[in-house]
Image 1 (tube, rainbow, N blue to C red):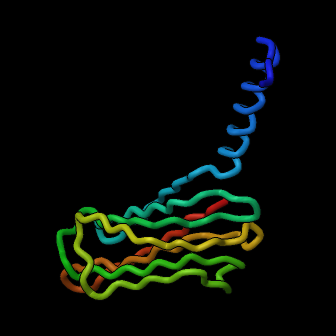
Image 2 (cartoon, rainbow, N blue to C red):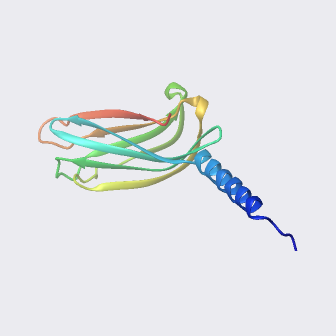
Length: 141
């Protein structure tokens, strides 16, 4: 059986803790949020992802339409990179998105850091008369 002195045990514990903190920092969970507004309505969108070596693992995305109680709003989401020329993930709603409700969707895609990835949010708000729209981009880096 190995015997460690008190000093050696402390050094070992500190080294293990530093290694664990380094591993946790290398795979940090992140969420970024933004919004846009048009015609008195607002959409908030959030991207949930984990930074990894060489890129990011995008776990999921969520959005909420506020100040709009209608049930025929339209949303599309795109995880893109390379200035928009590469689409890693796409989702398009039907004419059925309810205002004042939060929607959450899994993405489960890896995007390389050098592609400068971002999530694009676009919404067309259902209103009387013409339907206003807006969009915003959430960069991952």
